Length: 396
Image (spheres, rainbow, N blue to C red):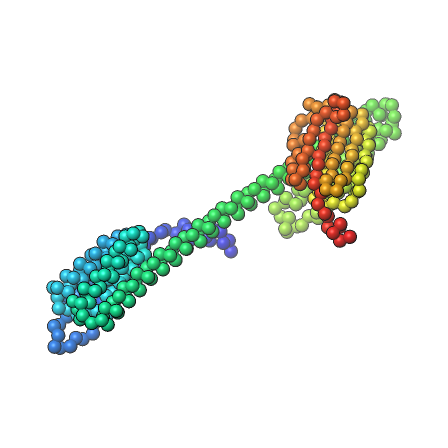
């Protein structure tokens, strides 16, 4: 069952407001005050008349508006009760139902100052009312207890309503926060996939173009090199197709029904193959490391691989270089990646590649800088990646 869809359908139902509840409450009170007219009276007393019953109904009728004007409803109820007491010698009530309901409504719906003032005045009026009726202390205590209870229940109802509103507001805020986080996560995932596809395609196509351009020359001068060039084109194309098929397979809508095998992310061990493919394009590539070479977390190794790949791709595409140097410098808490070529220098590399390098480094809390190489010649990419203890190191 789609819970969100069901919630949306429930929210779409028409809001009938408090009218049905208020009318229902008034009818219940009317049923309660009608009991003395149903039970036979002592023959020595005046009979219960229709006029008396209509006056009793008049004390109940204002309760329909008790939420919208609680203070005025309380005053109307008290006035109707006073009219009934002075005009009719009718049956009494076991409890002052209408007054209790009116005072409850004031406590539950009136502003703070108003409800306190009206509540105090109502409770104060109990003393003269009890004195004018029986004058007994028992009636006074009972009336004070019942009206106080009505006021307390009204305050508890208002507190519960405020708490419910706060919980609902918090739930809406959490839902909004989760939706924003989901959208941000989706945006980050789209950016990651875009970077991956850019790196895969850009690297493969750049090598294929270089090899294809060198192929005709090699056919005339060194046929064996031409064959190697065509083999390199084929290998680069197949590798790109495999990686793209794997990535697109993960994005397929029916991936759950037909799972696509997911190969591991590129690791530092694959750098040698990457360097060799670039060498086959005719570029001299020097690769080396300094410091204590050690295993890194898989996501860090994948980032290092992609940074080196993008830097070499930019060299092949834009630098017109003869040689390029790749150096990984391991420190205690940082890995520095330096890719330097002897090509045309700054201003020869544009597009999303360098932005992707900076984004990848920043995703690990690192940084990347690009510019001219030593002595102002060539182009250099330098990225610093903070290192954390890998699971393999923890287990050693």
